[in-house]
Structure formats: C-alpha cells, structure tokens
Length: 265
Ligand SMILES: [Zn+2]
Ligand SMILES: [Zn+2]
Image 1 (tube, rainbow, N blue to C red):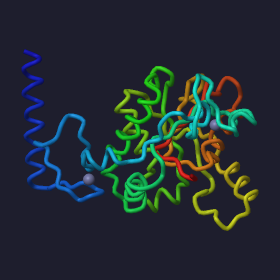
Image 2 (cartoon, rainbow, N blue to C red; image 1 turned 45 degrees about the vertical axis):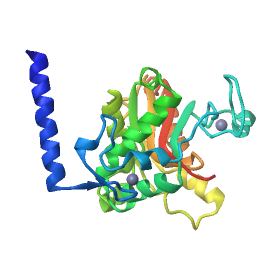
Image 3 (cartoon, rainbow, N blue to C red; image 1 turned 180 degrees about the horizontal axis):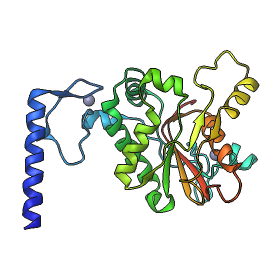
C-alpha cells in the first residue's frame, strides 16, 4: 500500500514538473538547448544539458592528498604537492578538495550564479560539486560531521542578496544527508576586492577578516568548510585559523575544506 502511494506521489510530482516545463520552458545555461523532463534520465541536471555537464573540466587524480592541488604525475598513497612537502599542511586544514578547474563552462556557471543572481543554479552546482568530490573521496559523509559555509561580509551579502557558499553547502547537505551550520563564523572585512593591496597587506587583510560567532555547533566535530572557489586557499585557511584558536573544549576535532572550483592555474 505504502509503495503504491509512493508511486502515485512520484507520478503526480512528475506530472507537475511536465506541466511546469510547458509553462516555463527550461534551457541549458551554457548552450541554450531546450530541456524537457520527459527526455531526461534520473541523473539529469535542472539547468544544464548532459553534454555541457560532461564538458566541464573536472579536477582528477593524481591530486595532492593535503591541499587538493592537481599533480602532474604521481602514484601511491602519500601524494603531496611540493608546497605541502616543504611545509606543514596549511594551518588547521587537513584535507581539501575542489570539483572543477575555474575555466570554461565551470567559470561561466559560477559567474552567472554569483554575479548575475542565477540562484536557481545552486542545486545543479551543488550536485556537480558533490558528484565530483564523492568520486575522488567516496567516504566523505562518514569522515565529516557537518558543513560550514564561508560567510560573506554582511554588507556584501545584503547587496548580493545571498551567500553563494551557503547555497552550495545547503545543496550538499541535502544531497549527502549531512548537518549544516551557519552563523559559526563572522566576516569583518571583505577580501574579494583587495587588488590594490600589496601581497603582505592582502595576507594580513585575510587573516584579520574572520572571528568566531558561536562555537556551539562545531565543538569536537569534524568540520568541512564550504566555499564556491579557492585560488591560494588563503580565505579557507583564515577561517580554519580562527576555529583552531578557540579554547580546546570549543575547537573542532578536524577541519577540511571543499570548493566548487579552483583557480590560479
Ligand atoms: Zn548545454
Ligand atoms: Zn598540497
């Protein structure tokens, strides 16, 4: 009886989506090809066609086991990039992964999402990111307890109307069945537009940008930070640093980081 009810509900849901497609036609965000639910498989994205989805530049193995940087070559379990061999892992972050290179379609999708306010892409972007990261690390859900998005400066968030990292983290939390904690960290300074500062000034600016607002959700937990993009890892490191500086009872047990894309190549 229950199975029959579920089937009816699924069919009803599908009929509604078919109706929705007729009233509000969907198109692929990259190639503009029309998308129709009756032609799609169960893994289909909402606003991206399968061909464009396949063409995105995925970051694949071999990758550094610490900072997630793609490596030209390498084999074995202990893969580390030159920077991670030279120094200890970036303070506080013991594992880091990104889904895509910040170029081509991945760059364009992120740009539309973030700067053109295409928030309807959040679900597809989280899905893409989740598939990529689970492929590299299938145990992600059992290795981490909760997702913490990197906050925006409140003024920037008011202007944009949303925090892209939070929307991605929300989508991933749903996909992976994980907890999400917002409001853990506060951002004091905007670090996105600091091109006029010197390298040292930029580092200092990022280091001072965050403070902990509430450690209740993260104490003793394995925390996975989420951001849309990383280049040097400075922002994620700065967030990890303030969490690591908490008194021992409030500190997370372990900190990792994931991003949709990685730039700077
Ligand atoms: Zn397409
Ligand atoms: Zn590395």
